[in-house]
Length: 270
Figure 1 (cartoon, rainbow, N blue to C red):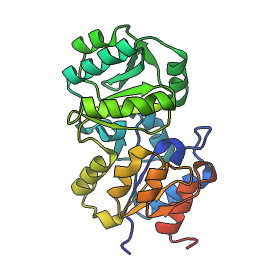
Figure 2: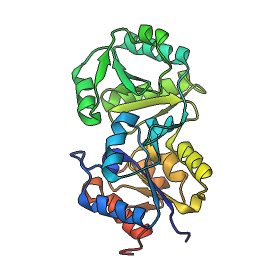
Figure 3: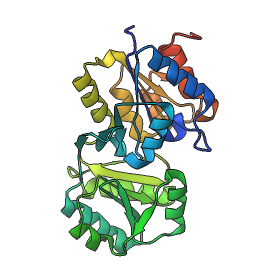
Figure 4: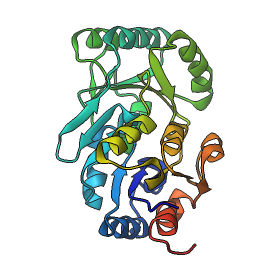
């Protein structure tokens, strides 16, 4: 087995425990890997501004994969690449959301915009730890704003379950549609994924696939695991993710990230 030289870790329900903290076990394992010269990065659906504090807390430097791979940006602010949703496509989504009374979140230039601050938006803000700008008509806002990096629906799982296939059909070839949590449906420009972003980082920095380990929990992490030589799913992960994983580690509340790093990077506890 090739030595692991790059580790990409999802944030929510993977690196972060249920209380959004990073366990001491995870912290020690990540620092141990970095001390051995292993590059560690975060690969998340979160906004860059929402991901950066965790990277700084861990002392991670270099490119971070955010918005499910739509934005790769260094911890020092240098942008590697940013893939945005075409304005006309985003406006069509916002128009449909308004007509059907759906809660839509819009991300432009690493800021969050919503129609209004509803209880559903409030729950999202408590997790992401960012502020939202209430702008009323989102379609009108998008007509005069920059192109969005991501769009996200917040709703009950059964609502999103029926919404996803309709959007997959109506926006085929225009949008990449995935989910990180049962209450979220996330839309990016077609072709965008954490896996593609990880492949670009590896290509630019000279890492081979077999030298990469990735760790995640959600359906949006499936491309991330497929892009790595060792793909690790959390015990609390989505069933579809576990099907493509090479290994299933402990849960996010049992420091599963540390368990995987100790096993495959630091060679402890095999």
